[in-house]
Image (cartoon, helix red, strand yellow):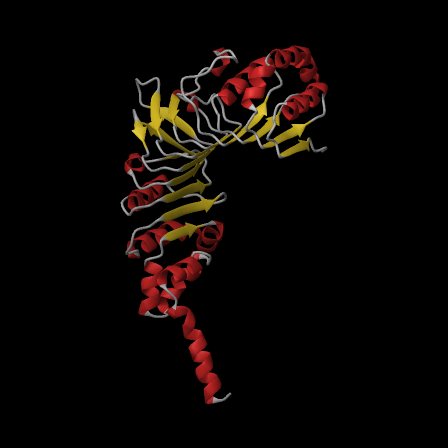
Length: 347
């Protein structure tokens, strides 16, 4: 190899180190964190780059590689970090962390400007989130799984834009029947298999996307007790939802009455996604009653569907009432562009 070729190779090898630090950060965010740490031995420059990495992701590969040393390694990485931590993510469905370690990590990142936080770890019980999470005003994205927290009275996350909760439960303070969680700028809310959320009033005036997947008795200040409100009545507060997904919607007058009441208060809704969950035999028992109910409320239906552009019906079985529901949607949705129907998969 000639000297020119060697010089060319050396030049090429240093090009990546000459990139702007924000570009290098983005590159390293797609590299396993154990390999990112190794780059720190290359030079003082690379030590500075990894110690200022804005997003730290400790995923299944990390926990599988380091085993029981995970907590100590995470602690050392945090102690060597010299800048704010914008994103901090603990993700492994097959590894656990001690409650005390989780508390320490949350407290540390809360004091270092964390904006995006994910906790999705395996556990025999549930991780109890420390009170410091409620004083973290920098949070914009929060994703929690297998967790719970004791909710103080009238708590708010002033800058939270996205909240995703899975296998989550909430306990109010002793002596408090209800608590209010104020989310003034929240746009996306996902609840999946959550428990005891009925004891909380969620105030989300800017909500755009709502997804409720197998969660139980969810209560919102703006549409509490929907089952007791006639379909022709409006609630006091309008939602800014553009997308709505409802799972396990039973084929019954009561459930469809609640649905119409909710839709009436979503004047900006353009996307509707519904899982129709009901045994065929049970569906037959409700078909006649629901058929006449939909006929009697055709004007309300026309109003709530006038802006809809996309509809998706899942777990479709092709029963008579389901076919009629498709007809009702098409006839009353003048702006509809797409309709997807997903049938129940045969096992």
